[in-house]
Length: 176
Image 1 (tube, rainbow, N blue to C red):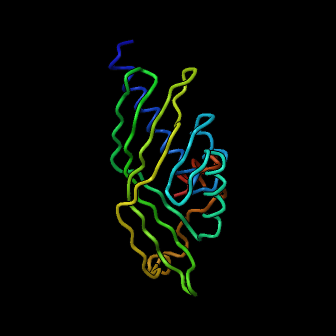
Image 2: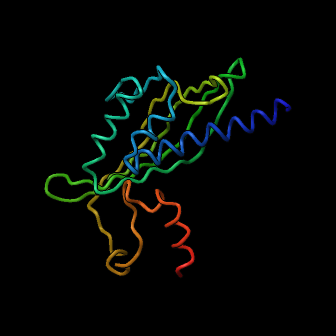
């Protein structure tokens, strides 16, 4: 296989790590979150610095009290190091958190970039370092008129979300 094709495949595998990371956060799936990191990986978010398993538990503890979370990926730039088993990433993100603060429910938006280092070990790409740079944030009172006008819409959840049962996902498509 040519080096160019191998790099396209590697970029796809590395991109999937960020998708799984986001799903792990939003669905409160600690095992999925931990699965994107190699043994010995380190996370540095400024306000928390730890090995990946400790970081994953920190995230679960922080997010479990939220009403909802929604993490989105934007631009993803992956560059390879001096060897074929090392890569670096800049992953733009936007995170939404629906939280109770001071007696009211607020929408908190945080946008920034993850700065990552990836390694391919035994044929598998995973993160070995992730840090977060926050570029902007905004907090405002929650206002959700959509749910008043569409009370029967399917709503996202945590591990009870429809994404966890593939049979339900397909059945929902045919029950139109």
